[in-house]
Amino acid sequence: MERTIIKSENFNAYFGNNHVVKNVNIEIERNKVIAVMGPSGCGKTTYLRCINRLHELIEGARCDGKMLLNGQDVYNMHPIFTRLKIGMVFQRPNPFPNLSIYDNVIAGYVLNGIKMSKADKNDIVEKSLTSAALWKEVKDSLHKKGTFLSGGQQQRLCIARAIAMEPEVLLLDEPTSALDPISTSSIEELLKELKNNFTLIIVTHNMQQAARVSDKTAFFYMGELVEYDDTKKMFTNPDDIRTQNYITGRFS
Amino acid sequence: MTQFETEIEELREEVKKMWKLVRSQLTKTLDALVNFDKDLAREVVVKEKRVNAYELKIDLDCENIFALYQPVAIDLRFLLAVLKINSNIERIGDIAEGIAKYIIDTDKVFSEELSKQTRVLEMFHESIVMFEDTLKSFENDDTTIARKVFKKDDFLDQINVTSNETVEVYIKQNPEDINQALYALSIIRKLERIGDQSKNIAEEIIFYLEAKVLKHTKKS
Image (tube, rainbow over all chains, first blue to last red; front, side):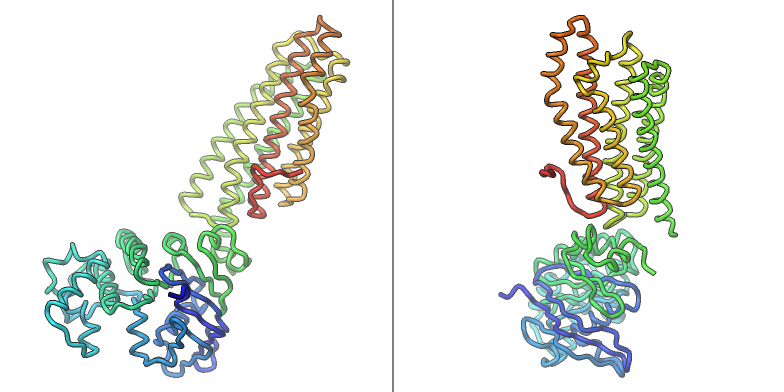
């Protein structure tokens, strides 16, 4: 199996005439946690949303260049297939409010019209909730609404929902910014576990979080990928002065 | 300037003050030795408490900055370097105090011949120059100056290596001066430590500024 799972080649993204991601070239390795950081408006979230083709859903948005998943350009795939392979967890926990915990986990299958036996569903629910470190807490209340859970639990439910589809890559857009420190810590621990089975790309404003959870870090500034390297190197001796100024809080 | 930058700048100033205090301790100790000035030597012993107070204060400041700001990159290297520089400067302060105590205890100044043969005063001057160079390097963020310290340490090592033989010859020629000769040997050993500690400080400055680890590597 190829080590590289995601590869961007001369990738650009635009909102109308606004060029927000500029000629990004990056190779992301399988089973790693990648942190994407940069100041607000640097294009990091847009880049993340381009990976599973959410960017194109916005009116006036477009992109060019290549975004390869296992060597195949995701822009030549069916977008639904892309999103099955590349799941996403958003900033605010967003379980379906009318669905139970159980139904939230298998929502991806139901919405895609995939029919399964009860036993298979049970199996997927238990496996996904266990992987999301939520099973023990909710196994006796699977048919309660997901919105009854705490914020941290809801976010882990969203992670369970995303991994239930067995994606290869999981994109996380500031997944702990709405959570308290304890819930944040449990999500961070979970990310370390999840990387055994998935490749995780996390956009975060919290630099300590990037340092704690990721193997590699990408720093974006004004739409450009300034630097991409091992997290330890990025946080001890970055090559680019812009990276250093950003991580040391001296950015103007 | 952010609060964090202010804290770092204040720490930098504190370290420089400690550096200058210890430089002054060394200079006074040398003057006391040359002029056999016991009062000056006592002053050095008393001021050693201030050096210790600086060490504790700087350690605490570093601890607080680590805890409150989680520094990274050059700031992290700066703090790690400061912690080690602090400890090395404090030890150099201890050495100045040790030599000053000898001056207080002894009843006789070094003879001109002893100083000449052992080159102890020459070594003392050079060790102060080395220590001053580390300060200049830190003040100016200049690793070229720090690198010069490594070469100067070779000079101290050379005097130290031959000191046993030199002192042995001197004692044979001047058996009545055995105590002074042994004291000179002891001071040479201490000055050699100042050279090593200045070298350690230079290594830390290079680590902080260039992110290069020079510890346990051949430098000259």
